[in-house]
Image (tube, rainbow, N blue to C red):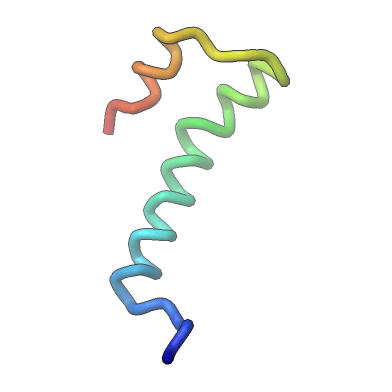
Length: 47
């Protein structure tokens, strides 16, 4: 059994990491430790 990621899995992981760093991380840093509103969460899901 191999526990190594396939190339597709590596690409998906990297794509998600880039999205989170670009779209979500700045909001987290600006917003702090509090909760997000429903509108903020829905706006963050647009790709």
